[in-house]
Length: 315
Ligand SMILES: [Fe+2]
Image (cartoon, rainbow, N blue to C red; front, side, top):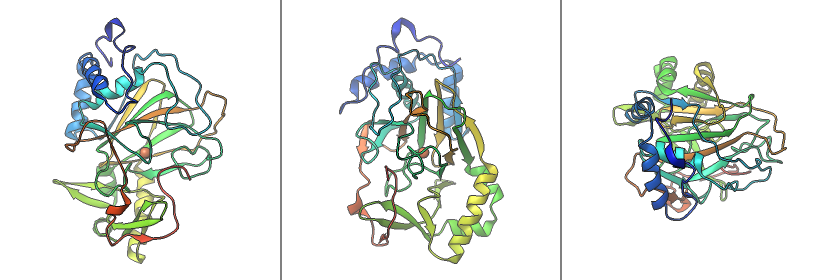
């Protein structure tokens, strides 16, 4: 059971998080959080402690009216109530601070759905093409999310999330490959326009553990050794990844530093009933809850280099 009780329409009363000030929303999220079952709280605390790397909560008692999924790109599909957002906010309180990137949305939550004309793109709004394995925010020079929260409003049975746990992956990678992946010999695309790269490793030490920043579409090895290591990495990711099917009113939380994720291809219908996921990022860093960050090209270091490519948003 996800909650003990969302009594008296508490969930239905969730204020909008789509404002410059999240105070009222977060205050309400605390009330919702207090309704979580012991089982839910335990799983969230395990996620926070790193004991589990991803977890899907299902059968969440959200009952709000859902408008048709849009077919053109907007950063937010208008919705009269904010129940799914309330669940995300309540869960985030156990994990850290909600934040966003202004290149994705000016709000701390954004919508993921297939957009007409972008079916074969590399963007998160693609559909007929697989969304490649990545960690979110890997292009950001300073802050990438510790957790990615994906709330499924509408599902598509063919669209599966794929999750590769870094610990499982590391067991499959030869030590020599891990060693190369820890060197700054990978070009990570950091901006579309002007197109620039940053030289960084794929694996890096964070505390006592290894963490990952990677995007199979937007990272390339600088030399033969790095290219070979990346090819082996891509092969092993596919070998160890597990499928997670998104059911309606489920919330998938992924440790973004300790997992890579992807999404299988699927056929969009563009009839208002397409898959619709509400996404949000959480950091353990001590930033203002609700901060919107920029990819901040000016801070790109002198290892960054220009080249034709695209990243992150629509292409
Ligand atoms: Fe993602």
